[in-house]
Amino acid sequence: MFKIFKKMILPTSVMAILPGVASASANLQPTDFVGISFWVISMCMVAATAFFFLETNNVSGKWKTSLAIGGLVCLVAAVHYFYMREVWVTTGDTPTVYRYVDWLITVPLQMIEFYIILSAVAAVSAGIFWRLLIGTLVMLVAGYMGEAGMINAWAGFIVGLAGWAYILYEIFAGEAGKTAADKAPAAVQTAFNTMRWIVTVGWAIYPLGYFLGYLTGSADATSLNVIYNIADVVNKIAFVAVIWAAATASTKKA
Ligand SMILES: *C/C=C(C)/C=C/C=C(C)/C=C/C1=C(C)CCCC1(C)C
Image (cartoon, rainbow, N blue to C red; front, top):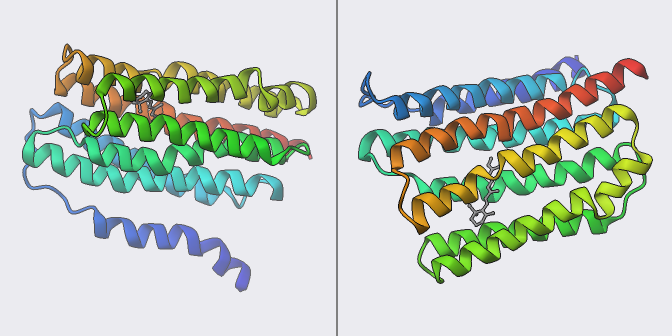
């Protein structure tokens, strides 16, 4: 009885909460493809949330934490997508503040996933955790301050890039990268490798958007929002799906 309750509590609470924040906008025009993309992505995030939470029941103990965190990433993103869609549909503005609030929560959680999947298979130092967290915060806070006009826009960009470079160094050549190469089993190595390429190639979209949309003003709000929306599917849902695949493979083997 208790087990069933435990299994149901996460998905049920998610499904109970989400419709409450998903006030359907009455203003969505059939030709507003950016608005439609906001809608589609928010629903993908809801579905992914439910899926990853449910799948925590099907993987072995050491993987449950990483899948639960992956579910949280999608849940937080889903809620922000509802807000962002609303801003876009009602004002036609880019919902920059909501994106940054979303990033401030989801990006550190995603970076911490590197640490958690390694600690599921090897003894790892807490230094990895802190370096990834600090690099992420430097990247996001600098970008935000630059975009909000609190500091020089170029300074924010350059400090933000340095934070990102620091993260990349850690997962490719630093302690995290070395631990994955030396100590992780094949399934985890594959996952780790795909995840760090998502962080390199997929995440490049965001500084590119800052550069083209904000610093040089050569990209318009419509294309930027569509690109961010599609990028988030890869950079969040596919990122967690890679962890899920490793978790499932390693559970079947055990
Ligand atoms: C789900 C959302 C994700 C994965 C967002 C990631 C955002 C970034 C990697 C942002 C990076 C930036 C820089 C590297 C330079 C400064 C400007 C930022 C914050 C856009």
